[in-house]
Length: 61
Image 1: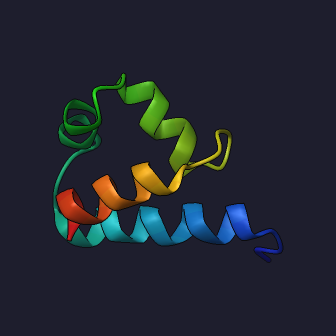
Image 2: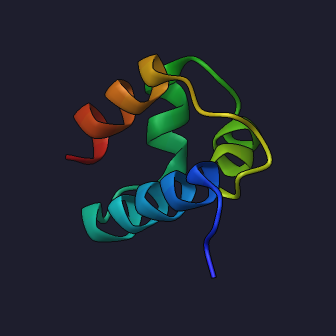
């Protein structure tokens, strides 16, 4: 069960990625970060800023 807001956000962002058909590599390039940073955000190991959420929504729709 996803209890924390960060877990729910990470799950929602992961579903966006899966639905977009795009790769984490593309998002990392748009954000100017390493792919591992994106991976940690999507697994709730790293907090996601609203700025990053906006970029993610733009890239993955």
